[in-house]
Every structure is written in structure tokens, then in C-alpha cells.
Image (cartoon, rainbow, N blue to C red):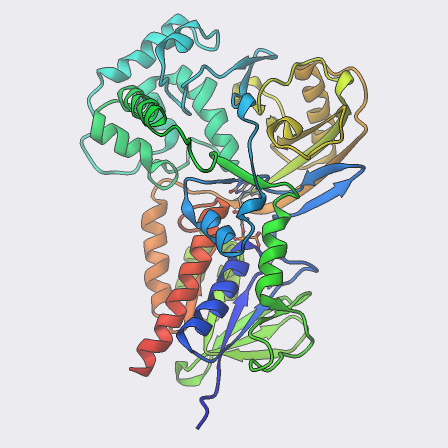
Length: 485
Ligand SMILES: Cc1cc2nc3c(=O)[nH]c(=O)nc-3n(C[C@H](O)[C@H](O)[C@H](O)COP(=O)(O)OP(=O)(O)OC[C@H]3O[C@@H](n4cnc5c(N)ncnc54)[C@H](O)[C@@H]3O)c2cc1C
């Protein structure tokens, strides 16, 4: 007798949910498991915070503008989707950035990595730090490593090893910019485990960075072909390429699920908000109630939402799990894409952008020179800048425009500006985050057929989210096999 297909539902069509539904569909096919996959997305489009738009010849990223290539999962998925040949790298001639200090932009010294120098001469010559600050940073070579295994905040770690100036003038803006977060609360172990390893292995961050640079230099010397991919990658047509390709590769928007014999694709339902989750009687699966009143059933369920929203959905199912999910804080942020004529910007724009320390008391967190960083972002003779703003009010975006103009010597009004607000989109990994996530995972394990995925758990970047979605898909398929044995 023909086996009745099992059903899987993925909630949330951001990159995490897309990766989960793609992997569920592909892997079930590969393993010969009859599985009907449905992806439920509340809004009118998939992609979540990833969203590229085009205006007057400019390419505007509302959300992320690149992903890191050293974490393999995004790159591997792009290779599988046959879009790796559309990768573009950051401009190889402009791989430096600036930091604002007293209203001026100074280049980050060559070799400097987040909080510490990896080369002496450019660091010694840099006007960013005082002599006192430089000497204090040098003490990192002598300060003994921390004896215990406890997590600490990024701020405490940098101040302990390298001093207050290293923190305020460099680590805080660099790291705060990546995580849109207060480094005083940010978990070092969850966000930069590499620095923990550096301290343990070398007893000094500076020593570790110097050795890494030496090793990289000798590797480049031996490997004349150079690295296959640069550190940050995007696509000629923007980050939307990844979303569109994932959608084309495995989703159909037919009103009713198409029988699998006719289409091996997953079923996408847009404008479909999940309101309530319940376990079926005898824990045989899940009942998914939609905001429009419809009720769906599935044996497998992946919640690919920001943690507070995942928590709300879990309130009926496991109040303890719901509480832990809701305890992961999220921050809001806004991006501001601004277009200028090149001749209206006095700064040479000889880098990829700048970051702004909190001590400068500006509304800007940082600003990418998008059309310098990547090709195809602005028409010839024009510039596209992309700023991150601490909050989202209209006065603050006005203020941010004035701050950009002052730092880059811009006297004319922009051709246009586009504000994108991201409410509660960025998970904040606070001290003790990894322990908290372990507790969440233990509680989720008690619920058969359920998997959690997203930027709340093991990394906020696109590669981490893809990995999280794929791992959730594989765990759900494994649970089917275990159930049958
Ligand atoms: C402004 C910004 C810039 C960033 N820049 C970078 C970068 O350059 N590089 C990088 O690697 N990472 C970057 N990140 C981080 C990374 O982009 C995100 O962590 C990642 O895209 C999150 O994807 P997600 O699918 O987990 O969540 P989301 O993208 O938030 O998607 C969640 C989806 O779920 C839907 N949804 C919500 N509730 C429901 C419900 N009840 N029912 C059904 N659907 C629902 C939403 O509509 C949404 O589409 C950035 C993040 C932001 C906000």
C-alpha cells in the first residue's frame, strides 16, 4: 500500500524559514520520505529582513548587504543553488574603514582587528589613540589569562585586556555596529568565541593577531592563486538574489497544495499569520491555527521566527519554553540609504565606510559607502551611502543626514533617501546566552516533532540563520525515522 505523506509546516519565510523548507523538501526527496511541506509567511513576500529594491539606477538594500564567507553555510547553499558564479566581493582596493573621532574620520590602522592591533607601525602612528592608551593596550602582552571559564561581557573583556580607550574608540563602535547592541551586556562567548580562544591559546590578543597575520602572509606567499572568496560576499543584483533563487528552487504559490507526484515543491502561503499552536491529542503532531481562522495540521513543525514571537506561539504548548524564548531581548534599528552626485561629496570615499563610537554622541552607528564597497550600487557619477541609525524616529533620521553631511563634507541635499525600519529584528546575545539557549533546547526537545530555528540561538548572521534552518530540517526528518523504528 502506498504510504500516506507526512506533513511539515515551517512558520516564517525569512532566510531561516526558507532554508528550513528548502532542506526539508530536498532531503525528504533524497531519503525517499513522502513529505508535504508548507511554508507560512505573514507578510506579502518571503525574505524577511533581506530586501533589495531598485530606484533610479541605484540598488538599495533595506536590510543586510552581504554575508561572511568564513562561515560555510551560505556559500555552500549558493553553490547548491548554482548562484555562486553571481557572487561579488568587496572592492579589493578599498578594504579599509574609518572611525569617527571629534567630528573627523580616521582610518582604522592596518592590521587592527576589532579591539587590538595585529601590526605595530600603523598602530603606533594612528592618531585614534593617545600614548597612554597605546601603552595600556600593550599591557595585553603581559596580563595573565583569565583563570576561570565564566562568560563575560565584550566590554569587560576588552577593558580587562586592552583598556578603556581600546574599548571606547574601537571595540565598542566596531562590535556594537555588527550586533546593534550595547557591548556592556553582549556575551563574549556567544559573539566572539575566537577572542576567548586567543586568550587561552596565546595569553594575549595582540600576540594571537600577530601570529595570525604572519601565518596568513606565509600562506598567501605559498598559495599564489589567492583565496577563492573574499571575506564578505553579495550578488550583482543584491541579496534578494539568494531569496529569489531559494523561492524559485523549491516553492510554489498554488492556492492548494499540488500533489507531490506532480510537483516536488513546497507550498508557500503568503499573507498567512500563525496565531496559535497546539499539540494534537497523544502528541501525534501539531495543530496550527491561522489568524484568518483556518486550522492546519502537521506531524513536523519548524518555528523560524524571532524568539519573542516564537515564545508567544509556544504559550499554550509550554509556558516554560515560552518564557525563556521571550526573555531573549531584541533591538530595533533603522537603515538610511542616501543617494548623492559624486561631485557633491568632498570626502575621497577611499574605504568601505565608517563607524561611530557612542562617546561621539551622534545618532549614527555607522555608514557604509555602498557604491564603493560593491559594484552596481549606483549609476556612474553617483554615490550610494547606507547608514545605520540608533533609533527610528523621523527627527533622528534628519539628524543622521546632517551628521553624514558634516563627516563627509556634503553641502548639497541628497537626490533621495530611503529609511527602512527594523522593529525588534536583532537578537541581543547577553552574558550567559549560551546557557540560556541550552535550556531552551532542552525544553523544546520535550515537544516531539518541533524544531526552533533563527537568529536567536547560535548566531545572527545570514550563514548562521541558514545553518540553523537546515539543522532544524534535518533534526525533524531524523525524528520521523526514529519514530518509525
Ligand atoms: C538591518 C539589518 C542588517 C543586517 N545586516 C546583516 C548583514 O549585512 N549580514 C548578515 O549576515 N546579517 C545581517 N543581519 C542579520 C540577518 O540578516 C538576520 O539575522 C536574518 O536575516 C534573520 O532571518 P530570519 O529568517 O531568522 O528572520 P526574519 O528575517 O525576521 O524573518 C522572519 C519572518 O517571519 C514572518 N513572521 C513573523 N511572525 C509570523 C507569524 N506569526 N506567522 C507567519 N510568519 C511570521 C515575518 O514576516 C518574517 O518574514 C542584519 C539584520 C538587520 C535587521
